[in-house]
Length: 294
Ligand code: GLN
Image 1 (cartoon, rainbow, N blue to C red):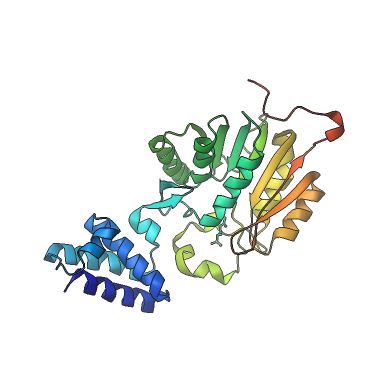
Image 2: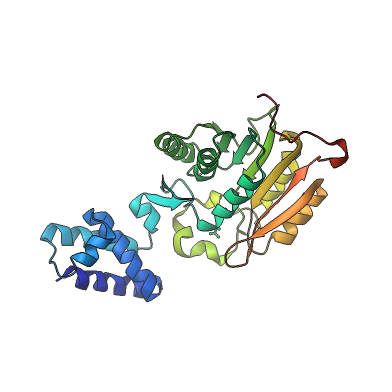
């Protein structure tokens, strides 16, 4: 069998088993093949009439079978690209998603120069590391309740040479007395009974990183309630949330005393990131937060 025939066969089975479109299935087949054969995907096109050796063909079949069980491509590869960089990922961490890149954009647009920035829920570390590498002036602290996730985040930080303080903490629990100019979080926000949790990649990801109470807002409520104690005057809190949670998050922010509320939409037009600033009083002509401690 030629390379092209094997890829077509794999794509057909992936599409049928996983409900992927033909285009998605062909792309996944190419990604898996290039990974297992250790070649660029263009090699597969240039060598489409080659015949694979027995060992190569067996390795390709094995990796396709893993994917046919539903295991996410990111876990099979052990890596996922986010904001232009590759992050190691595994079953201890949520797989970085393109929609979270909006959270990075929102934070970069608002983070004052030299601000201390807190990332709640490190996961793979992709948020804290991306912010630090895009804006080396920022001083990043990232917390996660899961030591296994923190190990992955630390490893990514070291590999990508991003200086981030990693702390094991249930939300703000280990941060008493510390203040930040900006707090970001991609917390769990899926409602417990959401059928989405039983589909696709979610089945393999840490449940605690996805689901958060009956309406999905438990973690977001806790973060909004606690954040003011950890924000400098005028500091920002930015949260990723579900497409249907924008109004609820805006209400929670307003009730907690946040102002300058905003909501950003993703490329599909869905509400995705909301935030506001705490204790900003323009009439006092305050210095932008973050310049302290220079
Ligand atoms: N966007 C993810 C999903 O719907 C959820 C991520 C999260 O809960 N933080 O699969």
